Length: 114
Length: 114
Image 1 (tube, rainbow over the protein chains, first blue to last red):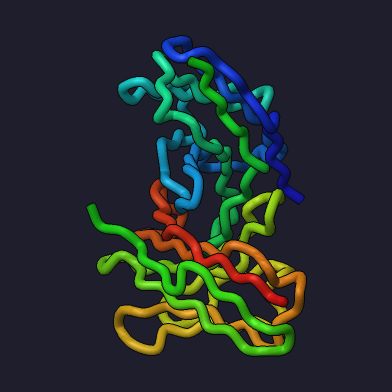
Image 2: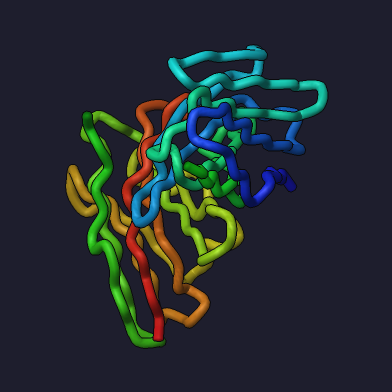
């Protein structure tokens, strides 16, 4: 079945860029997502990319997609303390029919050092 | 900004009891979902719901689980005869379209079975 893998922790200094990586196995993925989960909160959709794109930029966020290697990354420029959270990579399989759910990775804990 | 709301935020129940988790999806959304996240594990898809019936369900969503849209606004997940391993955060989500680029999640209902 589909699988999504992420490293569990990333530690960066405040003001530096953070790069969170994700690999996935389903070559028919249609959409790939990044969600953010702050402590005690729900899953906040940060950004997404359609599989026919290789880059998407949204303010401080840059998503890069390497479809050949099935590799997705999220770059956060000028990382702030408010960016501390768990970041989940997720993919939506192209079932061609039913409303299949998203497949999530385990999440990457982003730790910001002052 | 419209949001998905869930109640209760936290519920403790005894093993064997029935639990109903409630969700109010975003008002113009047509597709509804339940996911769960066992502590320390991935967010897992349970079920999707459209046009008053289940569209897709995962292997986790067995006869112990049921979903219902009892009125025009609520979407519920019922867990019959809860087990210890049902302890998890349960997320409701909704989207406007099938295979959508934006699936919005609620803040979750934390269920503890004792």
